[in-house]
Each structure stands twice: as structure tokens, then as C-alpha cells.
Length: 229
Image 1: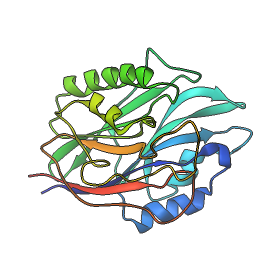
Image 2 (image 1 turned 180 degrees about the vertical axis):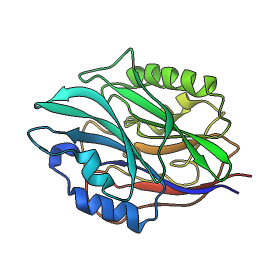
Image 3 (image 1 turned 90 degrees about the horizontal axis):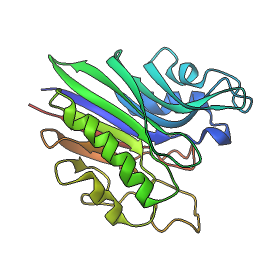
């Protein structure tokens, strides 16, 4: 039976996060796959290759640029114990102040496959996010791999009802039995703080969900265990 520990974590690249501490967190939690948002590559504020620094010798990574920033690149990344294949990046056709993307790759495990998505949706309005969710779901529905997970910061900060835009055919880890307020700061423009999530197809079982206790960002990492027959 395939069994994987997965997580999503917005590392707040603008606050110059401790990349070595993030690597230690991933390793200590025995994570197999992590979707990361707000990660820099060779920018003035973070003048190194952050994905490579976080991966170190423990993980492979796939970086997806959203925008050029401060002489380098800014976007999202997937970290994984084994290399992903069938990797691609999709730029959303609608976005706000910043161009947004989602990335995809396939992870081989125990004679099976898991299709992995990672995204960071726009913060401006629910209507904009709904359009991005529709594009993401089109890709997920067309994906022939039967087992799928979506990791991300969805920025659904106005009402928990926003999550209904994902439809009834996917299971969300955050908000099923418990709302995990993964955004730890307070912002007067936000009404709810459970904005990071792990979404799976219904053929995947979920167990041992938690937020990491280490404070390394303005978000806390959300993690869970996936298994299937």
C-alpha cells in the first residue's frame, strides 16, 4: 500500500526565511513531498538559489517561476524524495497584481503513481480565485493518473464557503473536521485564516493531519499522511 507524508508551506520569501531550518523541518517531519509557495531564486533580498538550498542533499525539487523579481525569480516549488516526471508549469490566464501559476509532476511510489499539483492563488478577490480554481480543476480532471493531490496557498480569506468552488468530487484536508488557521499574522482585510490546504481525490485516505509547531514564516506548514490501496 503506498503511504506518503505530504505538506504545503508558504515560506514568506519576502521575510528572508531560514532555508537550513526549513530543510531540517522537512527532514524531521519525514516528509516525502512538499509544495512550497513564495520562494525566491537569485533575488537581491535572497541572493542564493533558495530551492537548491532548501533541498540540500535530502530532496529533489522542481521550481516554477511566477514573476521576475529583484534581479531574479519568484514563484513556487515542489520538493520530493524521488524525482518527479511529466513535469509542467501552467500560467493562469487571469491574475491580479502578480502573475500566478500552478505546477504538476508525477511521483512514483510502491508500483503506483501520485499526480502532484502545487499552486499559489491570487489574493485580490474571491471571483479571481474562482476563475483560477476552474483552470486548475480542468487540468486535474483531464489527468489520467487516478490518485491526485493538490498542495497550495489558496488565499481563500473572505469566507470558508470559498472552498466550495473546488466542487464535491475532491476532499480537502483543511476544513473537513477542523479548520487549521495556517496564516499566523493578523490582517484587517482577511476574515478567515485557514488559507493553505491539501486537496486529494476521494480514492486517497488521509490521516495524522497537523500544523507544524515551528514558526519559520507568517504561515505554518500543514501536513498529512496519504495512503491508498
